[in-house]
Every structure is written in structure tokens, then in C-alpha cells.
Length: 223
Length: 223
DNA sequence: CGCCGGCTGATACGAAGGTATGGTCGATAC
DNA sequence: GTATCGACCATACCTTCGTATCAGCCGGCG
Image 1 (tube, rainbow over the protein chains, first blue to last red):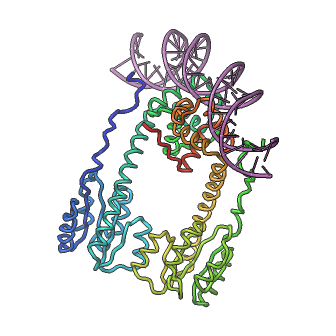
Image 2: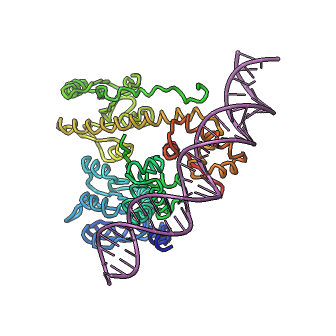
Image 3: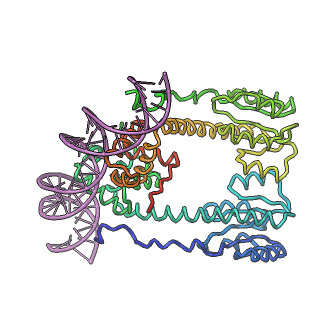
């Protein structure tokens, strides 16, 4: 049976309900200290940094999190850091804080997906509310990511043929039609199809179709 | 055959490739006039208004479009208008222009989905580029809307039972299991299933599953 | 070289899907 | 009251699916 099973069966999801981490990057130590207290008082885990570089040196953690970020930082500024976080730490929404915000900067930050853009002074409540929203998004992103990772792992364990068959089957073709497309016999299609179903851990065709959709499998049956 | 066919067969999609319309709402007539020229020079159809009310009085057109909007308007202001447009004219992305933009205003506008938020003075190129992006989004939104309308029309033609069967089938249950859930026999399930497939114009189970997903049909088989 | 994994195919059989034909029943519309 | 429609069920028949069993071919690897 080892030859037909998918990848590792471990379905152990990373501790999604761990204490959320709120990262703070601001070059003003008094801001860091006051935010640290505020964050702690809400039951979150604060981690503060004085610069973008310092923050990036920190290894990625696997927990719901968000980033409270000053736009104007020495060295790499907030917007530049945002670009990197957007690709490397997709599950870490960003809340900007700034003393000197201008409109174009705000637009850029928001277009890049920032949760909020707050100008000092702002009330604690506003910030906390933004953090809650951000952590919520982080949680959603994390679970979505975990799901996609699982799917991709399964998909990676398929052979080329199995993938082809899966795509065509998920597009609605009958086994015999798949065979026609691929130039093989129906019985062989059945074999590959069965393999694919097992490896993908799909327990119905409907399941497989949904998985194919999530994986973005575009099947283009030559019309 | 009339009893088993779906709703109207007209697949005629609205003229999606009509000339895009660019609406302008600004109380400054000189702005309206200059934008009108600029928009015309790009081959789009400009329509200008001096107030939000005037704009809202205008009936909704069926064409790719966008809205260039001054935030500070007499009466209903730009952000208020945005709220209404977001629900009534989903296919009309908004580009804000303003002389006096502040950061909170910008954040609100962008969070509500604005494409751009430009402060005067801005170059024509920046505005035109934003309009192109907006019209692109509009086109996408329109075709998505058209597709969803078609789906919902089909779905609306199903009887209650057919919908129940469709949901359960799309969730991966076998006919006999669907029958068990609903307390009816397998053969009856087959009948409803066949009806549903026809009315939804689905030509495979995979099709039906995808449609159910798009329609957001949550099937909760009692475990 | 032998072994393994991927790909292919055949036969066989039971399960499930799909459709046609035909009928009952109840509610609703005309 | 009759027609219509939705829901229900049955028998019959064929197609498609899913799997098991068996087997041949080929390329990579120790």
C-alpha cells in the first residue's frame, strides 16, 4: 500500500491558535515601549524592532501575526519593507503608523494591502481595533495557506500522467474521452484516475473537481 | 420540452465591448471641461456632473465605466457617494481627485475600494493610467456579473427539491446517500438530479460542482 | 544484471449513473 | 371540475465507474 499512498499523512495543522504576535518596527524607542505595553495588555505577544533590517533578520514564526510599522524608517523605509513582507510573509498584514503622512504615501500603502494607515496621534482603541482586524486576516491567510500547502503536496505526488488525467476528468470528460485526448485506452485512464483520487485523498469526484479548481488547473479540451 | 428547459435561452451578453464611459463628478466647471476633453481624446465617452445628486439621477448604463470623483462636493460628498456606488454600481470603480486630501480621507476611500486617490495637481498620464486600470476592472466585474446572473437565473428555475438534490450531489454524495438524507428513494433523486442538470445547463457533474461552488451552495451533510 | 516505478493494456464483475415509460397523489390555477 | 405542476416511486435497460487481477514494456539505479 505504500506505493499508492500520498505524501506524509500528517494532518497536524500548525498551532493556529497560538498567541498572536504583534511585531512593531519603529525607530522611536518611546513608541516601541508604549506599544509593547499596550499590546501586552491585550494578551498578544509583542516583538519590537528599531529598523527594517533588524526585523527581517528575525526568522519567520508560524503564528497569526501582524506588523505595526512606521513608514519613515532609517535605511529601508516602511513602504519598501511592505513590499518584501507582501511576498515573504503573506500571512502578516500591516498597519502603518506615522507622524508625517502624505496622501501619495497613503495611497501606495493601501494599494499594497495595508490594513490601516494611522497618523499620530491616534487613540489606542483605533490601533487595537486595527490590530484585531489584521490578526483576523492573518488567521484566515494562515489556514488558507495551510490548506493550499496540503493540496499542493498531494498534487506534487502525482505523476505527469496522473495530473493530465486529473485535469481532464475534473473538466468533465468521461473516461473514454480522456483516453481519446491522451491517446490511451479507457482502462488505463481508470487506473490513473484511481491513483489520482487516492493520492489527492479525494473521496468523490466532486472533491476532485473542487481541488482542481483551487489548484487552478485549467483544462483546455481541444474543441 | 418547455417544461424541462431552463429560463430564457438568450445568451446574448450585453455589449461588453461598447465604448467605455468615464463619469466625472466635480463641482468645478473648468475641471469638468478639461477632463471631458482629455477623456474624449483617449476614445472614451465622458459624462460630467456637477453634483452627486445629479450623477445619481442618471440611470445606470450597461457598459464598462468608471467614475472620476472629487471628494469635496456640495451636498453628498465624494466618500458618501462612494458608499452608494459600491452597492448600486458594483461595476463602476472610482478614482478620487482632490485639492485638499488628508490621510484619513484617503484611507477611507482606499479601504472602500477606490482605484486611485489623486491630489491636484496631477499629470494627465497618471489619471489616464488610473482610468485604464479602472475600466479594466469594470470590464472584469461586468463579465463576472453577467456570468453570475446567468447562473442565478438557471438556479432560480429549479424547484426546492431540485436545489436540495443539487447541493447534496455537488457535495459528493451518491444518489442513494442523497436519498437517505432527504428521505426519498434513489430513483427519485435521479429524476431531480437529471432535471437540475438540464435546467442548470450543466453537461457534466464537474460542471454542476463548479456552478454550485460559484453559487456558494454550502452543503452540510449531517455527519 | 536485476529490481522498481511509471505507463500501458486486457478481462471480469459489481456498483453507480442516466434515461425512458408509466403511474399516484396533492396543491394550485383557470 | 379539470388542467397543470411538483414530488414521488417503479421497472427496465444501457452506460459509465471503480476495482481487482494479471501482465508486458521501458528507463533509471544500485
